[in-house]
Image (cartoon, rainbow, N blue to C red; front, side, top):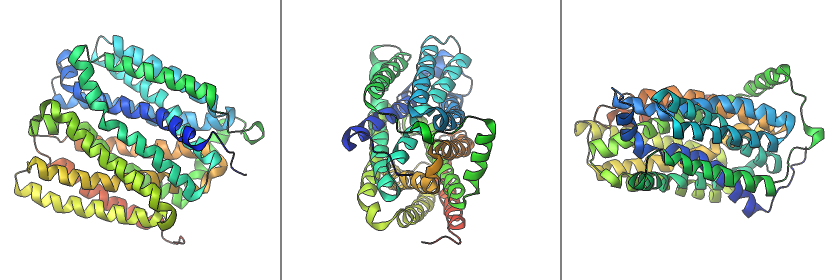
Length: 400
């Protein structure tokens, strides 16, 4: 099927970046509030505040496997509309939550709702573009998506400085409404009536089975989940690392943002060179770099009782995140390449499976926080090596 052209490319990329950035804001703007949330809800274990992130990713993982197939059956736009409505409901519940359980429920709804614009956006790209051009567009979108964390914690801190942490969710609600209206007015439907699937559980089950039969889809999906698990471990423990170990105070947002910029820079760099060098070439070198730099810095951390100097920790973090920035866009593009004929369901399977893989890995790393950075660095080194093994297995028998 010939790809369907969309909005003018600059507006299309900007719109998708806006839609996806709401997810990034939902994740990172709340990070500075962990300590206040723990105090307000009287959490006995400080690490339990990390569940605010895990709950959202749990809803996100479920939402993807629902939104993707439905978008193949009923079109891209209606499913994104429903997603925004659920996301807005989750924001409202989080604003009015009277206990920690209700807050977590609100976060699950936010993740569930955010899954639709996030995962269906990938299908929108796949509807109109293929191969390395798709990888280029995804890298640009992901660059903007990752650049948002450079300012999200500062925005969260700014809101907390003048009002309650709950109004972080008010901001998210406003952003969702703006994106909803822009998308509704400007973005055309990319899945024509004749290309839609008839909804049935049999279609979904057979589609999932077909997707996972592709070695390249399964392998790169697993690898994506493994690397994102390391990244999620960082998100879970970042506030504690910077503010408890390194006593950065309000400078936490600056250090966090600097690390996020490394991913954004890498994504932009990848978008410029991937067309010439290829996705697999870039993926291999980024994985090797991530594993080696993490294993090397682990020795430095152990030699300093798990608390190396902040400047050395930042050097490692910037290097590791640059590698991650190369990987995120390429993993998605490689996994989606064979399944353009069912882009919605395929994107759902890839996104949902990789997220479900990442959640326990990220929690395992974050929950081990005990006033050292050793668990985080060890997690990156081990998961980088595991990612290498998975990619090696994936490419056995495939043409380079």
